[in-house]
Picture 1 (cartoon, rainbow, N blue to C red):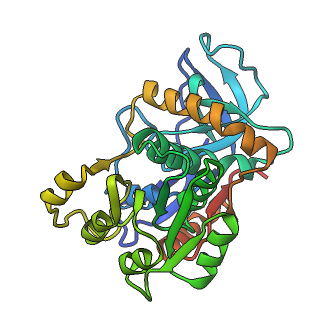
Picture 2: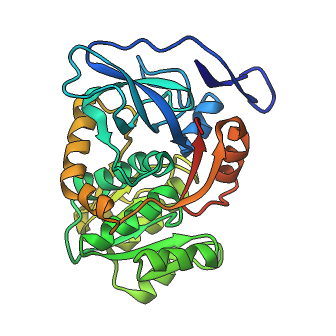
Length: 325
């Protein structure tokens, strides 16, 4: 098969679409012919050697995919060759084939094309596990979503809206803020033009949950925004890994600071996330009440261009890579 391979010795970690060994399929897995995958910021980190795949995962980038089943392991349940599926991956989406634990497969609705399927799983699972399973977000609570126009952000806005929550966002352009408001956010701040914490405190009396991609430079301001028993979930560190923490603030207001990743979780944890998300929100995806927001679709041979879009924060929603026409 072919896969996107990184030249770690090159100055720009150049990418090439080249022949690599075919994946092996265990009895508990299915082999999928990938039709589409999508780009995530973790891919950019992996490309430069800063986010290696977990043990046992394929060495190639790509945390989600949609495609058709090519082979079925002996213990892989009722899945059949030819079934259209999508799935969360630990790696290997930037390739023609991948072996996937059967527990993580989700059947692709007949009306969805593969690009839609590839844009759903990673961002919606990430938003779901962090807002609802980690932070315990409840109806009528207020959630602040940093990077509201990102893939995760656009998914999180819609989940918060459907859960009956007040949704606030930050984003870096007016066009991005406008799209967030269209998706269900009630208030947004351009963090490049205003201090987001000051703006939010002018608008409301604080928030219950924050989904944070900023990290260190955001930490003090994030904590200042949390109400009693507020929860801050850190899922990325775009402004750095270190920031000051006044522990007395956490203590007095009984706050919770939660660090979270998805990729390195066990199969059992990922299966539980998939099961809970699919029970609560998958029917809303199928019905069209919520949907993945796709910014750009490019062929897999233009992966470097796709990475540039994310690196320069030009996207609103997902950047999808088409593997098969």
